Length: 199
Picture 1: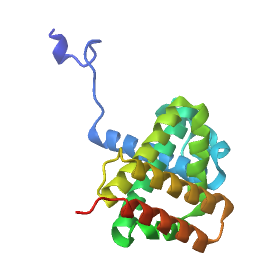
Picture 2: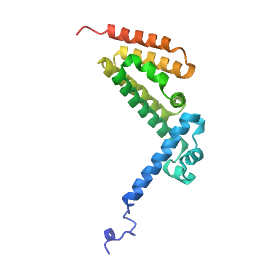
Picture 3: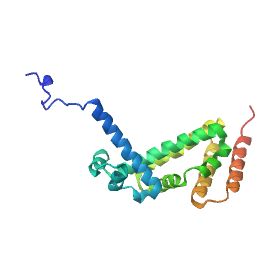
Picture 4: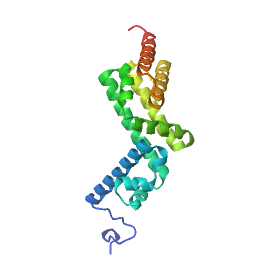
């Protein structure tokens, strides 16, 4: 018998039908969304296999099947948060301008942003999370560079990103006066723009 015609032959892999694959993708996406929700609601400690399965209304076995470890689950949840934040930030700047970013930060979901910053700090001890944290920082720098029409390596871009990150963290954690943050960000943007050579 030709082994390529026998699905029981050990050298041939059978593939699930498309509905099964689609169901698997939906389950995995549901679990990941549950992990993101728990992360934003309760922070790093809230994300466990059991809690994610319960939040997603799926059996515990499903969580451990799609995510081999809690570290993988956290990393993917962090990555999803980062991508969402970068997309939101770029859209806001396009629609309202860089100086108005403080208002976006002030009106955004605070618990979600606390979860994002908590993982950012935790990334200092986890090399896998560190790479995702770098993606967030590099993404913000790229957005600022595009907005100012400068190369990402320009020191003004890095300085403005550092200023923005500090104000962002202060607003989310300390909730300092918004007018003060607006003034500082506006000054930082003007300093960067005034340093630009004439066209």
